[in-house]
Image (cartoon, chains in turn brown, cyan):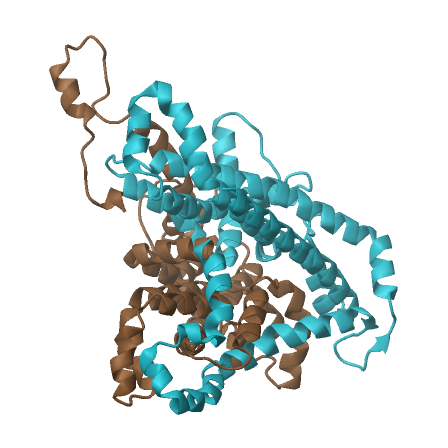
Length: 293
Length: 318
């Protein structure tokens, strides 16, 4: 987007040459509107980080300390000593990792079949698949729990991953992208006798990196942040994900705000880091999910 | 937008010779040999999606006609669950709370998202930072949001009460106050939900010719005209899409409620999904919960159909 290249506003030069009859700000007036709005949106997260580095004594007073004289790691220590945090973190990483990889593989395969291969029933299956995007998860969560019970997956990490292993949106997105790749690129390989799978792997997927990044980002966002499903499916704390773990921790340690906030920071940090590092990909994914989905 | 039109254009032709290019036709046998293996490509996805959505979707309907405690065998009660729902004041209240939330969340996120997008769609310094700061709450999970705002709006030590105290307003109950809790949850929802709308509007604004926009900003007289005749028509399909999408999100509200108020105080924040969760998984009347979920689900699907109808009509007339 245009904003990434610093462009100086043209009025600046006009300002210099003009006699100072009409006073103008040395910067665009929009800053006066935008800066407070941005600050307002950032404030809760700033407070999150700050309070995680304070002691309960600094927090639990009225009014609370806004600018602490010293920063502490007590909260982080407490949260690691009094909860299964490392375990929850590992569980979340595992769930997200499997979900992202599974989506990349399965959505690529299905998307390619729908884009390129002719087979009986492809249209019907594709339409059905698209329709599942419109089914809200809450509508199916009760019977899905029963399905998991039948499969013996209640209170298991595989069960937690289950619903997100293939996102229909991902299949659809990749199909659209594959359709935009010219057929000629594949035909030479096809005549040389390459299998479809090899064509997909060696020719199509390297071209589809932006679309794959979108699928990866979207499935990571969903699986990392999911709360309702692990809440329903898991019973034992050792199978909690971070989201569920931190909520349980907060319920049990109401007044330990600094530890709760430390846990919150740990929970949100991977997602924030991913967002800030790959902001362009994130924004493009979200926008394309809206415009195409 | 491109998606829907393309899906209609391309998918049916997948079976016609039109898409078969020359070299493939000469390898006819091979093509036909490929056909069954295509199913292997889609099989994992189909099996998983059938297990996750299609089977439960039907099962849910079946379940809603039964009394089921998730443990012992269920018993058929016909429309009993639905009749009971119609008379259940708790369910009525849950629907009302959900609608109040949606009535705040949907217009505010879309309105703010569009306003911010129009403000941010210019070349001044720090614009990227402003954009990032407004979008970032969107990637924060509802669990973290809920906990963070429980802390900020803590009636004893919260930052919010301190701020109010500083300007001479007395302590508020916030999440402990039945008259405030739902509105606070909506506030949190808007805080995190604006980012998505902003992203979508910013992407859409890229389609508006920049020279036209810039000319419009410089020449004040034409500003309104350009907004009316250039920007609004570009954004209209986006607004229709977001109305549907944000409504879907709003009606699915659960995590935030669970973490901040747990449906309270005095059931003032019991929204529909929370009602479903409570009935099915806390009170173990899965059939009753499924019936409630189905009613909401049908509402959502009706909404989706309606909006795609509106969108198609709009696209055709455009």
